[in-house]
Length: 191
Image (tube, rainbow, N blue to C red):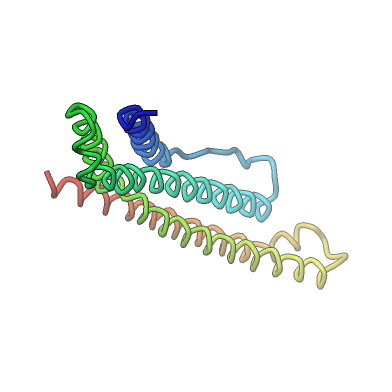
């Protein structure tokens, strides 16, 4: 296999990795909406928190993949370009294509900031896991200590737990908005 064929294969793989990474970062902002109208309040809130956790884990996963692909486009392909031996043995069009991959990867990395999104997403996942665990534990204790109590009275006792979840979900949604605005403001300042 000649060096040009290997370089062309690397160019194609690098370009695909960059494009897929950029698309994954852009698409990771999609939200799932669920209907929780058929259940009691505390169970609705626990499912809502669990769904938010799943969404946040997907967000982290997409952004980790996007970050890895963009790093590949920047550093691996950039490393190939930096080698004078390879630059001399490749055609100018392949060297130009490799340079374009590095440029696109760098630009996409700066624009989408997937590594920062991963950190923010992991923090949200951690908070959500903690609140779900705490509320489930407290709910189990509440139900065990109030066995035999009328269900409407038990629902009243469960309200503070549902409120804790609601408050935490509101905090997380506020953080998501602030995160989105911080990326948007930084982008508009660069232009």
